Image 1 (tube, rainbow, N blue to C red):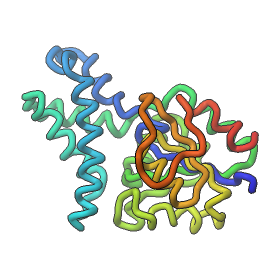
Image 2 (cartoon, one colour; image 1 turned 120 degrees about the horizontal axis):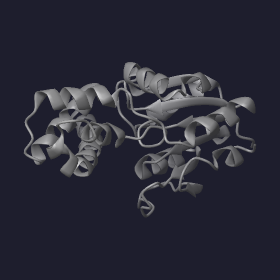
Image 3 (tube, rainbow, N blue to C red; image 1 turned 180 degrees about the vertical axis):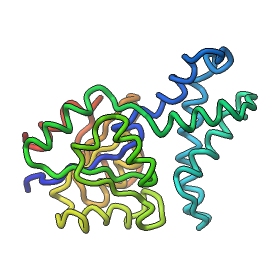
Image 4 (cartoon, rainbow, N blue to C red; image 1 turned 90 degrees about the vertical axis):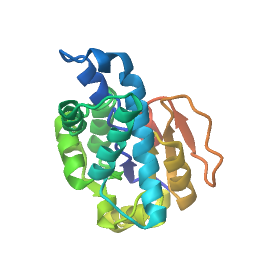
Length: 227
């Protein structure tokens, strides 16, 4: 069955989640950050994801902006950094994450071919709107679907249900793209055709559901969508 709809995770898939720490580290007066920004970026992302899963299990939902701030607090504390101004700057930069270089032309090809395109993300609508506008890709997305519409994080099935409701399409007509191995596994088990953007060259997750395609970046997505 032909693909009609391409759905993308946002953070780490379209948007470079390391960009905030990297950019701040290059600014004047950030010598300490310059020495440890890769560790901060890695721990920030890890804790961000862990907190979404833990809050889901605990049935204590907080939106992704709150979770992102909590994760940053942990990452800074792990490096012994207490700097309110730096924290505020990093959170500001997280609203303005850049897209990976292949993203804009890839999305443009999908739209020119008449496919539906959207984000399905843990991010809040406000975060995602700000980041996609800043990255220059909002115009090539038909919609932004946030977990805040259902009040629970990925990989809950009700999150993936939003795609079919929005685009009136069967799961097999959806090409779902994520850089997160766990997200790729869950979406595949749900019934989507999944392309895993394995930017970090990691092994496939030992979970139900395996991605149909494994890519190093998103430049091959139009071909997978039949363009």
